[in-house]
Image (cartoon, rainbow, N blue to C red):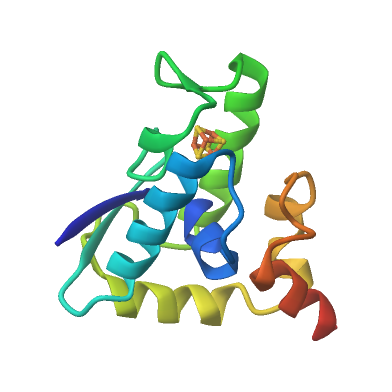
Length: 132
Ligand code: SF4
């Protein structure tokens, strides 16, 4: 199975515990989160709308929210993508192991997550905050 994921969503998936914008979004997020844990799944990376955005009520004309918000989201993606090889097709479990080793402190995600409305609900961000 193949997934397309934008950079910052690799962190969101690590912290997902069932919250989202609406029921359809959460249902899709659960599906994507299960797929990324399935053996044989391969992931390509992007800073455009992805397999999570496709079920999001904030996506309009391929833009997240509004131009200013979209720009902020793309820069979050690029903060993650610059630590990876965006042209590569990754085995999902290898990719998430890499994510764990790169983003392993609160400082390592601060620039990406500090402005996110979900950071209080995000298990990944909370765990890194506790490890300080
Ligand atoms: S459209 Fe925006 S808010 Fe919705 S999932 Fe994509 S990046 Fe997140």
